[in-house]
Length: 449
Image (cartoon, rainbow, N blue to C red):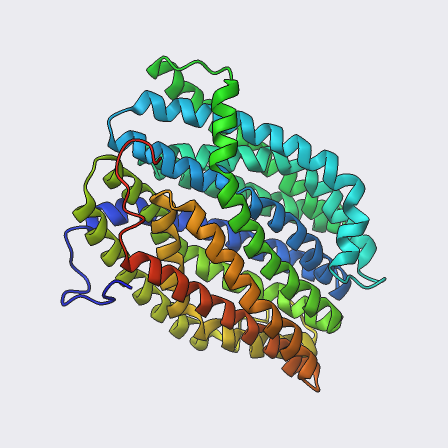
């Protein structure tokens, strides 16, 4: 693993390019979990059943988004390599084909997910009280899938072109609209949990149209046709397959934690929903450095600069550790007040507080893991990432199934589940760190063979 802390932790020659991408990306990433937390707080006012339903249905939707994250990450790496090699029009061509692939996958997801909704909800262990609310939220939110995937692909194109400001504007605008619409639909129109789902559909649609318009303008300036090419769409799908397998393994981890939490009781799944969103907020913030790493590493390797790649990687790992330590301290300072906006149930509040302690302690290690994941993704090292994700998932599963079952109270059961989650983070840090120390991932050129 690269050396973690330099002699000058707050001054480095790579900081300017890192922060030019990471700072706007940070705010774009934080916007999503912040407004998801707002939605969670609004739905929480409806009751424990609705909050638990949001946790169950939300994991299905997060799984769909996560397994398709290659539309953003794979596109970022590919376009950044082209950009580094001076082939901007080729990068935009790849991006346009990625948008078409996203739209096709989104329509397919609706066709498959709608009839399978009841099965998916049951697989996650929703109780009879929670099940109808979870199914309502899931089926309505599925309609936003094509828009969500287009947003992912469009984000990847612009970040590959070293533009992190436009994704920031789109993210803040769409998630602000989502939160505002959610409040109106739930509190004013009294639509219940369905109101939160419809707010998501409308906000994602607006974001998708924004990206299509922005990339369409860039394509016209570079003389790139907007029609899809069979070869390009196929190449995008093929290049993303390894990242798809990586994402599936990671989502198995998230789904298993949700399923286990649901089987621990309604209070446990409600608390897990809040803690998981807080953890996601912190990790997404650190993911800003990782996504900057995708763009920077792709550009350096496209230009054939191995030394610059190494130096920038080392510096980004340092920043990942520093952010992790800062977030650990922040959670402990705010720990007594974090559960307050989400629920008035004393049992749920106690469970949230206990599991947040584990989530906080994970932050420095999560910082290293997120950054190295982004670096290897930017290098196009998807095959290794797929295999590493599979093995770390297998390391996690026994702990997730044994530790909660061995506890004699719901409190220790949920804490045990989060300790199993910590085992997964540690396994990821070890596998990614071992790869980063070597040279196999340092492949240069406009395209990785």
